Image 1 (cartoon, each protein chain N blue to C red):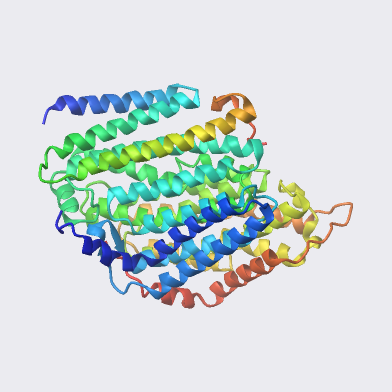
Image 2: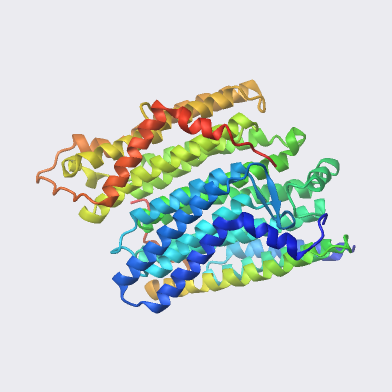
Length: 100
Length: 491
């Protein structure tokens, strides 16, 4: 097992989290989430190499891809709905609901 | 994998999955109905009928196929236990009550609406029985994605905003959680989180990554039960959703999340061998939830927003039942969950009726409206008194069982136990101030014009029945507790 892939996956995770935290546009945040998911996929496949007689890590990776696709579809449809009402996809600029 | 992969294993497993299969069939039928009928009011009638039949049938099958002992199905992906069956029944009851509360006028797309609610129900029942990281994540997504859509389908601008925020927050937490599972796989070499291999590996070579991974996974579950520090989505979502959906969100996914949290915490706790003080951590999180929920609720004016903060505080109380890490704590959790379901729905039913007929939104709008329907005013008062935890309601018994199981537990040090107990009781006093605000406005405040009286309808009858159930739970808690005591928690 080479540590390079492990570092790469942690780098992807860190990048994803920083994108989610710093970017303001919802679509870019969605991209950050995809980065975190690819870090998880990389991890699962990489660790599966330790157990050559099993496939569960790779199966896990396949299902994560499915989950990521579903999430992207739902996310984009919600973003389109928001855009129709507010003409923006930046959550900070939308403030209909609040403590008042 | 221990078992050999075989088609007979899958075929044999299907027989134990009848409630879930019924729900799946119901989802498909409602989708088909949505394609065939276009007249909204006709479609509404057909889809609500299909929905109710499906949920009742699933509930009946759950009781009919009540598992006597724990059964592992599909190579250990699913485990049917009576603990899980109990929570499944609660989830299905919640769905049936949601259908009773839904109104034709506030639902734009009936077929989609009922499909999504039923999908959350299916996700919850699978989630409760899941035993494997893959099953866990897929059923979690089956709860989450329809929840985002239900929020976004809610009323107009507010619904879209709440949906977007809920989605971004939720999918980030889920992604981080998936990363946590992949790390845990590296530490244990298995995704089956109740297998002995998993627990042995965690006991023998405990690495920092394993702790990090457990923290990430628990964070995801805390989000589902809307506990601090992952509660921020709840107020916006509840405010934007209709009363029926708010009541649904505050019970069904939350109870499913709690049942799984109980299982996962016990696995991570390694039957008390873990060096991490999970009991103390859960206790602190629960105290934070109760306190922040109560403090947040104090300054709320919007009725459903107030109920959102109340549900955060109640999540704290439900988490407190996980602190003892023993059977009596879980019995308290089961009792509290059932009572919580009833009292939350009783309150939301009345809020929903006032909102629908008289456009009551804020707490002040309730002023002097007791005359509109004395029965409903008494029902909401009963529900809120139960949520505080005062007699003569089931809420009191639930809190009594909860605190007594905490007091007799040995999982945390006596000082910490005392602190939890005192903070919990103090918070009950704080809760008095905001829960009693609605009855105060209803009964004490006057208004110039005489309020129009509310019509009697199915919703009213159901809410009175729920309030009666709360009173019965106080007088005869043994009815429910006797049943709960028959269930056993197996990992």
